[in-house]
Image 1 (spheres, rainbow, N blue to C red):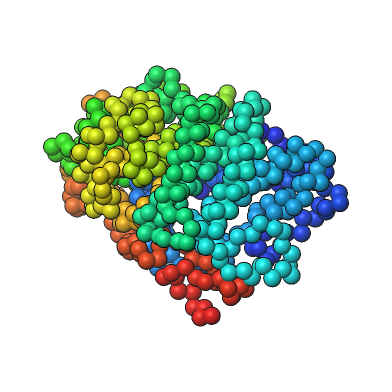
Image 2: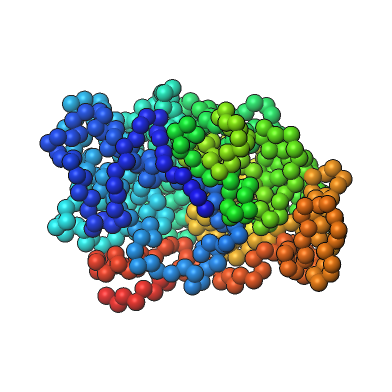
Length: 600
């Protein structure tokens, strides 16, 4: 897949060379303590690469149990597809060295205010950096000083995640105190502010609290409730004192879609975003990813589509015959966000008038995504620029803060109806959906979401029902934003990876209307029979071009011949440390279950 991953963060950005290993130290040519770090411009240029190097510029194509592609990821296949790498594998530390260099030298700046600002920014990114490391590896060495090639600290063992999390909170609290709190017109939301730091803290404290709760992890220091309380308190403060609100034009049938397709990030909802621009030749690939059959053929899974509620707030899976409904029938009267996430009947790409059916050769499940798909002539272009998407991508947005708050309170057992009204129900209101009622949710936990086959069977207790509903809301609201696999890890729900990854239901050979206009969009014919004469574009031979779970009928089963191995509960929640790193530093222990052949 072709991607363009440069980033401009409101002003010009200087790109520095990078290395991939803590021991392969960057020389920082032509930058010395005596001739640099003197001005605000020096500090800005030195910190600009953090935005480009650390922020995810393609969250829309992360595979998981709800969203797959033609070629399944190693995580989705499991077993021996996941191996201990020799190098790389996320064990990279160059950006951390740059951070510690800045922090060691920033006070040389003649502008004390600028020095404080960029130290706060750097500590924000250091907390961000370590959050990614803890999610991936668990315990990791904590480094907060410059290191030279002869420093013995290069061979430190891994520090406990409790120590690392404590240091991360110190860093992010410093950032919250010292980063600007206004939304500067010239840069917002492309520069980190104290509000972005608060969003980060609420996010990683929720992660840590739920990870410890569901993994049963007890460490010396704080228990899981401490982190959940930190998350809830920080999110609440941002909700009450921050300058953000949900993007809402009172158009529930289009507001969600328009938020992500707009050329420029919405400053009301986006707390931190990544800037893209056609004029500056800074692109991503989201539109092409969804529209071109050569770009991965992404699709939502039927399991995920089934979780979208009916428009009246009842469960789709409580209807009689939901298992074998046709595409047209299953899409009727659903949560409006479903029709703003995938192609449903009557779909027209923004800026066009042609009704488009789902394309089964572009989506392996038939549930073809449209989130981030832009107007063909976005930003004043005269031709379709599908391969050059320029809608800004979210890093933190207000919707996630609301979800984090509700979940933290629910997991603590302190959630009230007022809390739901200030968080989850704002999201449902934007979508035109009925409010979530705490008492009703807990009195009637959703059977589909609690099932071992399709849900989260390890969610129990008095708040089971509302926790399941918050997870439903989170999956729907944040799809294709890069959260799902991390959520499964912190919920100890790796078993969801093993659940079905099927697509649309077809009852057998015949013609199918997918747009609702009464005309066929897809024709299926039995294997070994003559291809029917038709003007329909999408014609597929069952068992050869289109595979169904029951052979002649059933759900689309594109990956039927892939031998998937069950998620390894004792291994797969953490990634392995590369063998080259352990060979260099014998004090690094390997994560459980990963055999790398090293016996020291």
